[in-house]
Length: 310
Image 1 (spheres, rainbow, N blue to C red):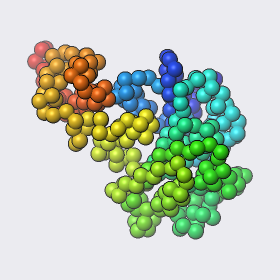
Image 2: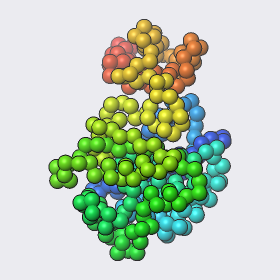
Image 3: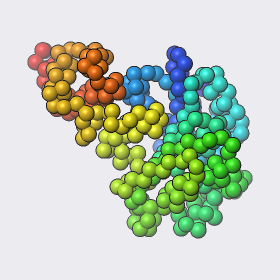
Image 4: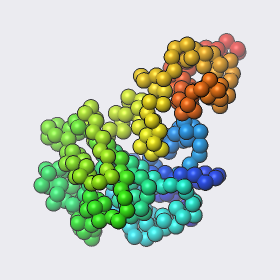
């Protein structure tokens, strides 16, 4: 069921494993792309385990309310087909992940599928144009009005109402910025209205980021904290275990030893094994190796060493 140029992409693991379903965010000048592909591969390395991945995108930029081409001609058929794909993978647990439009999709589909956890950044709580007008939020008003004209009933787009009506125990991890997007949108972050609505739900944890705008994931990426946040939100890994450039776990002596091993030709997995034999948590060891392999000073040293060999 995989088309040649798909709006969905299935990347199965070889053994029983968790499943992460991602949703692409809205793009206007280029086609909507799959999201978090490279990031999830990095998380696999940091965890030391593979997991199933399903990537979805909505080329119609309809906030996934019309479904996903190739899976179904409408939302209900898409959800049925997606549920069939999930059952075929037989995952140990299921999580959805997205940002902005993708965050809305992650919540909408996560609630419908009854997944174990939903993680979203900057997600709207409703696509009701009347609510947007009342909040003086014109950012995606044209999309909301188009959806209404196409037959999507505004009250059916209210994720908070859908969540409140769910019989399942909710587990939502949501992220919102506090800075306004742009001067033309006013002095307040318009997403905080949606954050407050979600925060009233039992089982929903809302993280607010004072230095972020609509896309807190971009700030976390710039601060090199996104890996730690995703490991925590998706897999319950303590962020204190994750070695980060600006929040190191390994001291300088251990980092020098690790750098020397890698420069001497040690494989990353061998370096990880050596660190875990010293008593370090596997996530700490793997994140230290991953961080060093992207460090510009280390890369310069490796480039110079390779040039000297030739």
